[in-house]
Image (cartoon, rainbow, N blue to C red):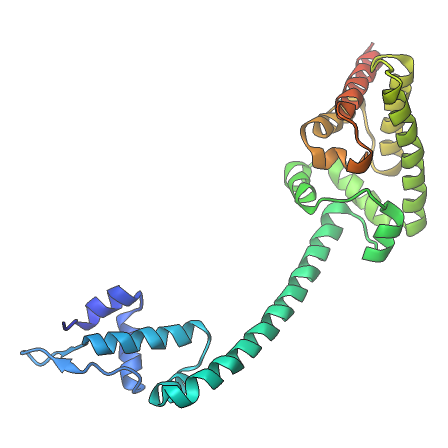
Length: 257
């Protein structure tokens, strides 16, 4: 069968201008003509166009494609091997750029300006989930409290983070002990633990009035990634997030009188 330039452009998903360019470059010249003298593409031309588009997708310039098509047996395999090496190197470079971008996002959204090694030394099993940090940034990024917390976090030194995490670990141990002993979430010990948690946030990040503390506790209950910032998954128990949430809510009610 024979096809017009417009039909071929539609089949191949290219523009008529592109086909004209391939014609002028000597890559793809219509091999047939209509009775009116218009040039038409035959099935062999379409097969050649498929090859051209294949090599273009791999990033080959037109002059190299022309050389391959002149002698496919001699040129195609060597050219593909070379392109494979180039693409592999490019993928490696792009992966490095992705890591740099992820690191930049992590610093911006978590406020923690430590190297990966320092982060591991300081935080241990407490991990920052970048997806949660991103969602928190989108959700709270415009609020004054969030911006203040991120600014404070960015100012913390490695020693600040060590002290912060040491305080958090000691508090976490007492939280787990209270939960394991069956302490009521509205009992005095649970309320003391909730208040210590609120003061910890205020001391290291931003003012934390009861309503803010309740919103934070709501996140702990609704999103495991948020609660993992407080209690690593390896230390969690079923119901622990609910226990802390209930204690925070009970403390807020008491403070409001």
